[in-house]
Structure formats: structure tokens, C-alpha cells
Length: 96
Image 1 (cartoon, one colour):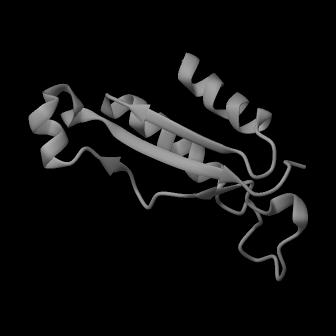
Image 2 (cartoon, helix red, strand yellow; image 1 turned 60 degrees about the vertical axis):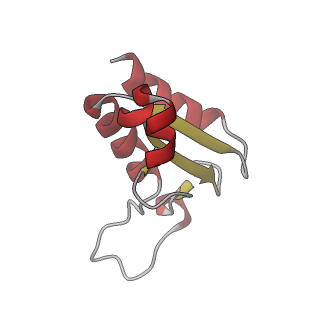
């Protein structure tokens, strides 16, 4: 519940060009982070609208396709890193 409130607040507080990086260690946490970042990086314009108005344009640009995971070497050196997922995005415009 706290994460669901925090991620949008972090996105809102970023300046244009600012970046957010989130490490999640559980699948539920990762799902919440993914949904928040994807929602902010997707146009909210209706499909039938012929042009995209500025207020419907995405606010974020995802910096990582999917989630980055620890390498095999990192997992060998630090077994607790096996479950970590990293997601990152950059703010590209101010929210309307």
C-alpha cells in the first residue's frame, strides 16, 4: 500500500530530466513498480483520437526494457541478489 502511494509521488516530484531507479526484491513489489512506471510512460489518449494532445503524452521514458536482474557472477558473490529486479525511468515532461 505504501509503495502504491510512493511511486506516483516520486514521479510527481521529479524534475524534467530527473531519473528514478527502483530495486524490488519480491514479485508483488515488482508488479506494483512495473504498473506505475508503465502507466506513466504510456499515452493516455483514447485510441480513436486522431492526434495525441499534450495532456495525454507520456510523462516518463523507460530506461530499461523490462527489468534488469543480477548477473550470474553477482549471484555467486551475493546469493541474496538473485531475486532483485531493477527498473528505471526518466521524466520527459511535466504532468498536466
